[in-house]
Length: 135
Picture: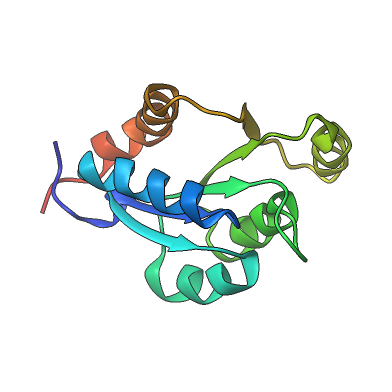
C-alpha cells in the first residue's frame, strides 16, 4: 500500500458533522489522508491548497449543493475523482441537469455501510495507486 502521497488524499464534504467526522475516521483508519469540511464553501479553500485525489460529497449541502460543487472541483482540480452520496430520492433531477452539462457522477444511497464506502473509494483510487509510486 502506498505512503501518504497525494493519491491517498480524500476530501469529505458533509453538513451533518457526525456523519462527516465518522466517515473521516473510518477512512483515516484505513490509511487515507483526510480533510473534512461541513460545507462546499469551506471545502473550496481546502481544494485549492490541498489537492485531493478523491472528493466524497453529500448531494444535499446548504447553499451550494454537492453536484454544483463537484462541477467546481472538476474545473479547478480535474484529476480529482468525485463520489456523491445522498439520502434524498429527489436528487435525480440534479443528476440529470449535470448530465446535460456533460458531467456524470456516481451516487451512493445513504445510509452507506462503511464496507460499501471503502470498496467504492478503493475502486475509484485503484488506478491512481498504480500510476503514482509510493513515497
